[in-house]
Image (cartoon, rainbow, N blue to C red):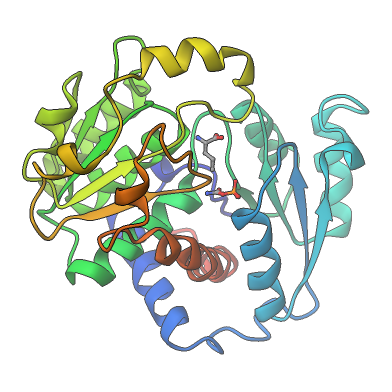
Length: 308
Ligand code: CP
Ligand code: NVA
């Protein structure tokens, strides 16, 4: 039976720890797993634009000896030209894996249900697990540990935030989320995060005060206030998120060794000030690089996974 990487909720704390340790190994030995995907092709369905995800997956698949087939939004027109179930049943006859960036998370579930090959979530409206894994690898590199640290996520309770809840709860890291009213993360992710946190020692809290979230935090994290597909809401969102910018004043409340994180693309002057994102505590390009290593680890993990 195959294993997917659609949502971190489906992974145990031990599996997440394994993924992180594999990603570290892969990073320190780039030839680790070379030829692993030899003779294998991976289809990459993208309904939205991408820089990091597309390039890191294509490069990672190449480094593992495989063949990546990029399918741009208009190539297979997921959900428009033919049913998603038919796309899944067709691709499964050709390729050994499907990486997909979709508007609706339900499409990933459908792709998984109707294919016999692993499906990897390259971002959906619900979550962005590859990003969260790379982020945790970055925190681990910077602090030498993840458990017991505190991350403050300030901004929109979106897909990136949901996956950070999952990963923090799996690794025992505390997460304080500050959003304006109406922009909170998924209550289901929060509930599951709190439940898992009881076992790992992680505490997840949601609040409206950016200052309360930032105080003493080791990691300050933000993402765009307008995600892909929400462009029509731009004016309203820019107004609603006033006061939620990570800037030098807010950062002065954090731990003095804090790091600044952002999944990118970023909007300087909106969710983050230029001095913070381009300042000495920013690790945004380590995060971007770590997408490559984390995703190679995910692929190695999925193709070696044995159900208990
Ligand atoms: N962070 C991230 O997923 O970037 P892209 O949208 O460029 O892939
Ligand atoms: N929340 C953003 C993340 C981009 C990588 C979006 O969905 O557009």
